[in-house]
Image (cartoon, rainbow, N blue to C red):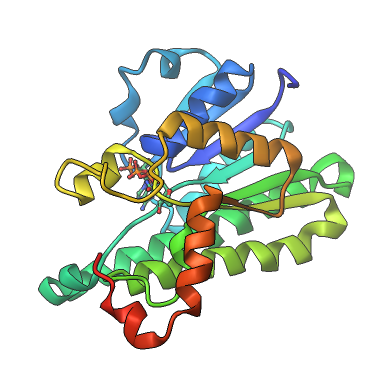
Length: 254
Ligand SMILES: NC(=O)c1ccc[n+]([C@@H]2O[C@H](COP(=O)([O-])OP(=O)(O)OC[C@H]3O[C@@H](n4cnc5c(N)ncnc54)[C@H](OP(=O)(O)O)[C@@H]3O)[C@@H](O)[C@H]2O)c1
């Protein structure tokens, strides 16, 4: 990998995003890590390296994201790779308890993704006197491919939108040499997934470790895949599930 690769990861302060930040740092890249609370990684050893910068930014704030991207692009170098791993989750039970739980899902998973892609595309299209070049990546979810996602239809819809946003930007930015990859993972054993499952996600089908997910994602990015769905077993399960009649789909619990 080119030592000068400049990577910005929004949603890099924990889980998959932090794993990817470590991966690119180990490869010699300069890595800008962003989240609302960058102090979460202040004690992580690699995050103290001079090639790593920490940024506080809410991806739902379009103006703040534009400032973040400008800061990460630096003086003339530009961003080579933007990864958006920021994500929010809600499900039917949470919405029933608190209707305001829907807004962060839409503002982060949909609006926030567009804020980030839009700002990064501006800087990438203008690179090298208009020659362009670069790579945009979103971490969506296999929930976005599944009909009747149990208890999580809004999350599922937001991730379906994330995949569609990737498709739209890919078509628009191809003439500028900018690749767009939708990462579509099944269950990954992150602290956040465990938190959503009362501390233990081991019952989730085809659960994958964070380290393995990071390797798969990095490989898909290196290949400049348009879409990377994994693990294949979960993808196959979702395809079969989508063929079931509606009453059977709705019978499945979370
Ligand atoms: N784990 C899974 O099984 C799984 C499966 C499929 C897809 N995914 C997707 O993968 C992504 C990462 O998931 P994860 O499990 O690694 O969860 P995570 O550890 O909670 O990571 C989410 C990241 O997003 C940041 N974030 C949240 N809201 C933000 C906002 N408004 N502005 C900026 N940053 C924000 C968080 O940092 P701060 O708290 O510092 O803001 C954190 O760094 C998510 O998009 C998720 O939907 C996860």
